[in-house]
Image (cartoon, rainbow, N blue to C red; front, side, top):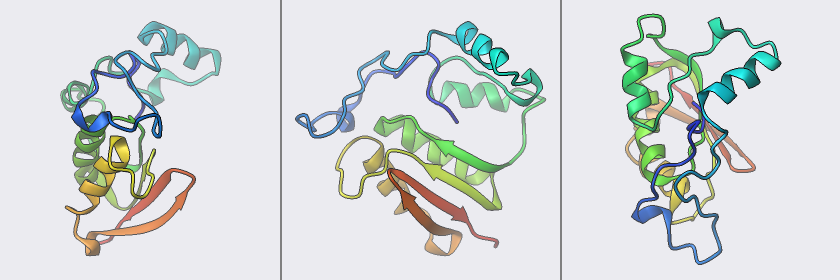
Amino acid sequence: MQKPIAGHGSPGPKDVGGRGRYPEYPEGKLSCGGIDWFQAHLAKHDVSERNVSLYEGFIPDCFELYEHDPERSGKFAFALVDVDQYEPTRIALDWVWPRLNPGGILVADDYVEGCPILASAAIRAWLDTVCETERELIGLEDTQLMIGKAFT
């Protein structure tokens, strides 16, 4: 998973209220300049197009594009969710988890224990919905929470 190539979508009610304590992510922030710029950046670093699929847009629309791409269906061994805002983080976690192989690793970025907004709140809410026997909290490095999917 990656940040939207077009930047962030409109913030929702759980993305504001930090009064300077937490970063703000207004619409369009962190845009890298679009899909053409991103493809050129990958080519500059010799990343093969065979290994990467790009879906321009926002979550969940990008996931629908992925689902309809006959070359890119299947499960993941590793996924990184780093989209900062509450709603897309929650949607991404709900989408990725069933597609993660048993023994796979999910990294949820921007997790700050006790933060009541943004991705942190979405990650906490999502963790509360996943049975503890299905997951293992591997560790927290800086703001990256590493979660293993249990073998069932």
